[in-house]
Image (cartoon, rainbow, N blue to C red):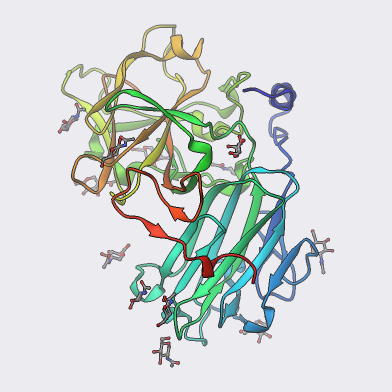
Length: 405
Ligand SMILES: *[C@@H]1O[C@H](CO)[C@@H](O)[C@H](O)[C@H]1NC(C)=O
Ligand SMILES: *[C@@H]1O[C@H](CO)[C@@H](O)[C@H](O)[C@H]1NC(C)=O
Ligand SMILES: *[C@@H]1O[C@H](CO)[C@@H](O)[C@H](O)[C@H]1NC(C)=O
Ligand SMILES: *[C@@H]1O[C@H](CO)[C@@H](O)[C@H](O)[C@H]1NC(C)=O
Ligand SMILES: *[C@@H]1O[C@H](CO)[C@@H](O)[C@H](O)[C@H]1NC(C)=O
Ligand SMILES: *[C@@H]1O[C@H](CO)[C@@H](O)[C@H](O)[C@H]1NC(C)=O
Ligand SMILES: *[C@@H]1O[C@H](CO)[C@@H](O)[C@H](O)[C@H]1NC(C)=O
Ligand SMILES: *[C@@H]1O[C@H](CO)[C@@H](O)[C@H](O)[C@H]1NC(C)=O
Ligand SMILES: *[C@@H]1O[C@H](CO)[C@@H](O)[C@H](O)[C@H]1NC(C)=O
Ligand SMILES: *[C@@H]1O[C@H](CO)[C@@H](O)[C@H](O)[C@H]1NC(C)=O
Ligand SMILES: *[C@@H]1O[C@H](CO)[C@@H](O)[C@H](O)[C@H]1NC(C)=O
Ligand SMILES: *[C@@H]1O[C@H](CO)[C@@H](O)[C@H](O)[C@H]1NC(C)=O
């Protein structure tokens, strides 16, 4: 699974550690950062977004059906100052240099003055529905950011923006950026009934939560893959059950399989621990409760790094996903091979029976960083369906929605 490129990357990472901060080595083969409807470059999170009209490897079909809007007074971030507005189905086609997973990040903010709040937006690729009939009218927020990880298996990616009948659609910014092949595997563990889940690479994933346990918000500029990690406190079931701990980021010892591409220093160097280390009560646990849509399955990655023990084999606990034991008597330092060495484990899970939450718990002692809960927006092998056999709800991608006409 580990390609030569990754080994080279790792060597680089170790060298990078000596010179603190120069660890960013992954260079995405495809790296489209577009600010839509803008007439000039925009800098956001230390990156330059270019206008959607200037890039020769991106084509905008039916551009005649679109117009642009700008505002600089109210936008929450510079990237939301302009928008391209579509009156009919319009497609962006991206030339893809390297097949494989790509981040598709979409930014939406209803720039004032164009009735965008009542716009109804559907976004589809040839195989996946990314957004279905979304409207700010029924959304409790001022702007919307969506992140997907899609395995692109051809030399182009088409994003179709479809207004509902008699409505308009719009978008403020788009990113299409290569993801390292090693980041998201094809296989993960299912807990009930126990067994492997294979075929993940055929699913589109939508990021739902990415949490930095016990640590601050980590923004895109501090993550080699432009990810954002939020603090976990608001998801704690009983917030007094945890106290945060942290060590210097430079303490973290990345290995050959876990590199900063998996999760950055700031994620592994902070953790939540049991509220009172002296209380050894077997019924005491830390639980995170994450609201999710029960119609989907979830890819859950749990990150660990023993930053608290003074010696090997002193930290043992159980990990649960919902009520299923995911890891019994997990000896962190043994799993990782040493203290301060990160490792992670992947699961695929439904929501907790009959509920619209997914929970993750640890009992006894410490735990580190849970992250990346991604919603599967699945697709069966023959395309056209948003599907996962387990889904209670199937959305069909009408033929007319896809393709370039
Ligand atoms: C916009 O950014 C691109 C890419 O960084 C750069 O090549 C181009 O010169 C910039 N254009 C302007 C007008 O600054
Ligand atoms: C944006 O700001 C510039 C000056 O900073 C101003 O001249 C322009 O009118 C503003 N545009 C809008 C749409 O508010
Ligand atoms: C889209 O959403 C609007 C409400 O925002 C609703 O009236 C309409 O029926 C929905 N259309 C579809 C096709 O789901
Ligand atoms: C909208 O969000 C605010 C703050 O995040 C919250 O207090 C409020 O209950 C939410 N309203 C609805 C209808 O979800
Ligand atoms: C638009 O209306 C037509 C006919 O009324 C219908 O077949 C089609 O599904 C509608 N499209 C959307 C996106 O709602
Ligand atoms: C805004 O859009 C909605 C739905 O598309 C429409 O019903 C309404 O009349 C529009 N309002 C204005 C002021 O254009
Ligand atoms: C993408 O899909 C292709 C074809 O199914 C597969 O061979 C490849 O391994 C997948 N890549 C990733 C990164 O999942
Ligand atoms: C860690 O806990 C302290 C005290 O409870 C709190 O002030 C601080 O904000 C927390 N840090 C993070 C990153 O959550
Ligand atoms: C993120 O990066 C900025 C500047 O590079 C730095 O000042 C900040 O401390 C970093 N913080 C975190 C939590 O990543
Ligand atoms: C913890 O919970 C208490 C009561 O349930 C609440 O008042 C407090 O605001 C919460 N603290 C945080 C940081 O969420
Ligand atoms: C964790 O503790 C809560 C009460 O704080 C309890 O309801 C729950 O069942 C416990 N979970 C596990 C997996 O032990
Ligand atoms: C999710 O639930 C469905 C039944 O609704 C079941 O068939 C499927 O195996 C479950 N998936 C996982 C990963 O547990």
